[in-house]
Length: 477
Ligand code: ADP
Ligand code: MG
Ligand code: ZN
View (cartoon, rainbow, N blue to C red):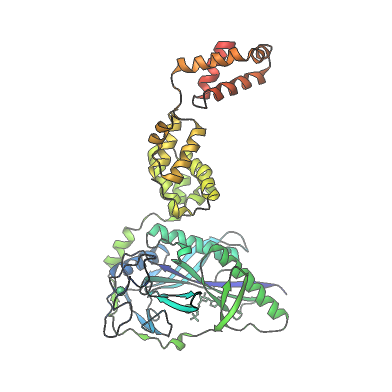
């Protein structure tokens, strides 16, 4: 029997606000354990939460960017559970009236070709929990409350995803939109974007979904891909062996490539949700929502269309440049400085990507002055440095954030622009290679290339090749 995969994702993203959702503590990643905490986020009795306005604004912005309806009257609910990393023993979240509903993201249809929409059921605001750290030395578990109360958006998709590739593309699209909106840095390795992956399978042609399992907190594209594929396969094998899929929460171990049963899946009723009594409902006016809509930044799809339409980039280049805010920002800055979209794209797609790849650096961790790349390109265009030299300068910029013009000067890398000086070197080369000169005069074109090469080497690549060939022709032919 043929089976199809059904997958729905619950994506959690940490918002890039300065302070937490219900108190003034810093949201900064890291820091000494338990230093970003106060009475409110450590759950002391008698304290009262106050909603961070920025969180509401970011949620609305995200909802609008994801084609959602905004819930004018929304409110918080209390989700009760005991976890050592959540000292209050409940999480303030939204269940009954989430702030955004009914959105969608467009992706490629991996089964039928063309495009398809993955519907978004809802987006709700909630607080993050702290972190448990297991200490091998003392065989004890420590708790760090710094992350308690960091604002989260949970973006819940409908089960519209039909393959591992679609799951990855959906999260890639979401990530880019969240980044471009400026609501989250989406650093997956720091956990600021993580996905709960729900998977079921059903016989091809069936209209009734199979029983699903959920794998929590997966935080890399590769792991999402592997988890969907392996879990669908596990379920198919169970069914083919005449067994049943049990609805449960599983832990995905990406190193081992398998998942383990953690607990039977809990339902909303297990959490004894009730309206949060410490927070008043939120009432949003049409003007408030309109203002956020009017100020939405350029989103990945619009940017991509502009790069193709206005700048004449290929679809492929535009897609890559719009896949990460770090690329798009660098490209925009570089185009401003060089006035050449083609050159700017060429350098980013070529030499810069190679540097990132060779050093295993994520685009978000590039930490050089944004203007430097454009300045290097201009130095080449103005015949101040050769293309080979430019590559060296880019490497120095990438590794040490040097200033291109200063670096070129300090290392004596400028092109020799004085025709007299170039001519003297070309004459030396001609004098030192009489045989090649003779062969050229006998019609052997290769010898001319050889001589050009010798000149460029003597000039250490610091003269324009066109100038060198011109002088060489004058002298020998
Ligand atoms: P719960 O209320 O138990 O959390 P939801 O209906 O909210 O369940 O769904 C949670 C996530 O699971 C959603 O992202 C949804 O798309 C996904 N999902 C629901 N049913 C299935 C299914 N049969 N197969 C795969 N994913 C599913
Ligand atoms: Mg759920
Ligand atoms: Zn606090």
